[in-house]
Amino acid sequence: MDQDQTNQDSPLESSDELKKLQENYNQISSELNAIKTSVEKRKSETTTLKILFYTALAMLLFGFIYTNQTLQRAQHNNLKANIDALQTRATQNLLILERKLHQEILENKGEEPHQRLNKSIQSMNHALDRLPPETKGIDKLVKKVKRDSEELIKLVRSEQRDFAPEAVP
Image (tube, rainbow, N blue to C red; front, top):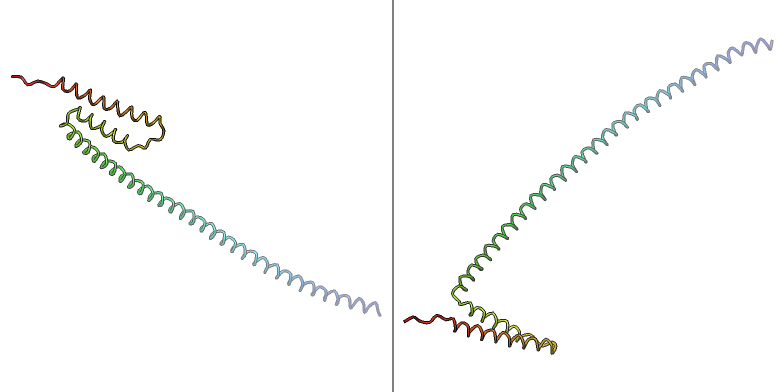
């Protein structure tokens, strides 16, 4: 009887085991489906984040290029304005120098050449007088230049008197 009872218990046990296995299978299957859904959801989120990241990166790049271009344009305009201002200033300086030179030419036209030479030599001698004698050699040279300049003035004056036109009767 034991054997019959064992045989009868066996189908019951095997059907219980089958039910447990079926439940385990269903549970594992539902967990796998949940994991699969979660992975797909994560994949979708990852794709969305990648799209956001690359969009933000593209916007930053565009912003950088636009800002850089705007700054370059502003610097170019600033340089242009500075160059124009410098050209205007240089032109004004040249005009002022031209006027001064023209005025000096007109002032010097009335003077005789020997008078200008006398003024130049006198101003040179005056400058030499102000120099402190640093060495004996320099002091000798200064005195020699003064002597030579005085002789030159006398020579020019004497030649000027010799070549002066005499009054015609």
